Structures are given as structure tokens and as C-alpha cells.
Length: 311
Length: 200
Image (cartoon, rainbow over all chains, first blue to last red; front, side):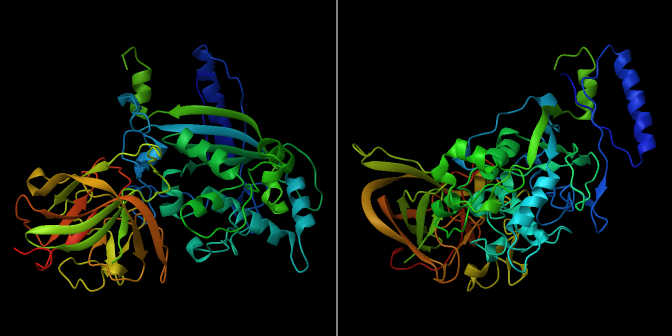
């Protein structure tokens, strides 16, 4: 595969016209389209842009230094090559130096994630306790409510995860304690969109639906793969990191959204390692059905690539 | 006396004046992100570390070194009172200090850290007459916390400046202010009066 092209528009008609035009250009250049995947906005009960489980989506983007000017900003070198990044501990190693033509570009991770929405909500129903709704259980798993409201704004006031569990998706992906987790050098910029029809929870079905996950970063290994492998799918994170740092730790587990299911987790880590993981802290409802690692060059680099010039 | 963690080492400040700086230094404290293991069966007799000190402290991404520091909700003023330096806060993601202008280096020195075991201590509440350049990891996390570590290498030092500081603050780096993304804090110290450890 040579290229991944992402097209987006405010309305379907515009998008279709542009896709047709790009297809013609691709054919004219003697290239072949290997796969075409359409996505579209899904809205939750409160009218917010959402993913198929029903959670408001795209609300926790890192802000980039020099772009928005907010205090939480992350160094631009975490997303664009050739610029300074965040502080790096020595044992994480140096990121490789990039060629000059890559400066200003980003590495891109695209994934087609199938979501088992019926299975997710069935589990949430199963796990609810007296006085709880399935949405309450789902909120603990995600770390925020369906409308995006966080369970806790400051994780430092909740070190053991009593309000926002340590295994919750938002906490696994961004522990917000840089002195301990070095989370500022593991952030990614996401721009995804759902695919497939929304599911009516009163009439569950197993249609193909999910998320077209698109993320940009300076290092796939340090950022996307680190999040997936080390934080989402390591049942001892965050407690092992907290303990090493001399901090108190609470209950751990897998990322309930993108982590392993109990069977896969047992195979990978052994039954002993997962037996203390609470049932809600297993995943298994999101399956990767396609994936591309790509590099997104700047426009200047694209122009350079289109010529016979030496890089 | 208690100290702070910097660069996988322990720094205990004793004093700094227009003539010299006095401190204790110890290693290693098992910084979780950069633990450097030494051989157990034949440990070195000494370790050697470099200390580089600049006055005035270098800029921070081209701005004044105190950029991003606040005290009681307002920008920290280095010329103000030094009575509440424990309460100075940092904005999230505060930049490192820049490499200093060579003309501002008042000390650039390698020192010996002999094998001299001791116990070093941290206390959240004990007043500290100095600042860190950013919130570096410490084995304590909040009011009332204390911690100790047993270390194998330590030294007590008095180092005279090789040229007089030109400002009332100095920045102490155990990494020669390098690289720009280094994961170790500098110590920012206001110069005080001479004391019994500085007889000049």
C-alpha cells in the first residue's frame, strides 16, 4: 500500500463528489484503490457527537503548544517531527532523528475498530449493583458519563481511583500525573469518526459498526503503541508505576474499552495475574479489523515527493 | 536537614553566598525512570559528577527563568520575599531552562562522590530556601510526607565560584543544562549571607 487518503466534508453530497473526483485522479495516475471505508457522524441521546457505545467523543484532545495557548498545552514536537518534544527520561531512550524532508510531518495510525455495542451494554447490565444503572457502570469503565462529564476533574485528589477507577479508559490513556507516569510524552491527536449504523439499545443487533480511528503523533512506538501495549493491556498499570514511585495504588485492570477480554488476558498474562482484576476491568468489545501505519508529510514535502528531486 | 531529588541524586542545600556554594550530594536514589544499577560484587570506590552553575539563571525558552512559576496565584517575583519558596507552583508542562550564555557560568566543576553510605531524608513541610526549575519527581507527594533513602555514595562540598555571580540568584545543574529535553531539574538558589561554612 502506498498511500492513505482521508477525506472529510460537512455534508454527504460534497463528500461523494470529492471521492468521485479523487477516484478519477487515482485511476488516471495508474493507481488502484485497495479499500474504501465510509464513516459518518453518530449522535448520542443528548445530541452530542458520539461513538457507538454512546459516549460523547473527541472531547479530550491535547492542546498543542503554540496553537491554542492554553496552560495544558503539550510540546508541538510530540506531534510534529523536527520540533522539541516533552522531557524524556533517559530509560525511555532517544527518539530517532528524522530526515529534514519529514520535519513538520506526523506519523499517522489508522485503525478500523469494530465495536460490539450489544455485548458492551449486556455486560454493563450484568455488572450493575442495587441502585445502579448500566450507565453508571459504563461511566466507571470509561471514567466519564455518556455526555462527557468527568467523574473527577483532578486525579491527584483521587490517587487510589475511588471516584475514577485506575483502570478506567480515560485514566489509562491519560493518568494526568506527569511526575509519575510521564503522560505528557504519550499523548496523541485523534480525529476519528464512526462507521456503520447506530444501534438502538432496546433492539440490540450485531451489525458491523465501529470507529475509524485516526491519530497523529511524533512516534508510533512511544505514543500509540505504548498506550495500547503498556497502559491499556497491562493489568499492573497503574499500580506498578505508582508503587515504584513511592505512591499509594488502588485496584488495577485492563482498559475496559480497548483492553483484552478475560480469555485473551489469561492467555497473555497467566490466570494468576488476572484473577484479582474486577470484571468491569476487562475489555473485549473493540476488535481491530484493519490497520495502517502511515506518515503524513507537510504540503511542501508532498510537493517535493511529487518531483524527481532527491530527498 | 532534608533535601530534594535531582537527576537521580539527592541534593541537600547548606548555603550560598557571593563566595561559594555549600551542599551535600548523594547517589543513587532509584529515580523510577532512570535507575542506574552499579555492580554489587565490585562497586566503584567513587562516582564522579559534574556541577555547572550559572548566574543569572539562564532563560526559559527565551523568556525570563521565572516564567511559569507562581506564588499565591500570581507570577513569582524573584526580587520578592524568599520566605515561602515551598509554596511556589509551576504551570503544567513548564519548559526547561535554556543552555546558559557561557559568560554567565560561575562554576563548572567535576567532583568526587566517594563510597560513603548514609541515609538521606525528604520532608514536604520543612522550609526550603531554594526552588526547583520544574516539578521533578520526589519520593514524597504532599503535606506531612517524609521519606528516607539509604545511599552508598555521598559527599559534603564547599565550592568557590570561579568568577563572582552577577545576579542574586544562581541556577545549579548536574547535567550541564543539556540536552534541551533533559529529564532532570535544576536548583534555583537566591544568594544569601556568608556563614560558618564560608569563612571568607
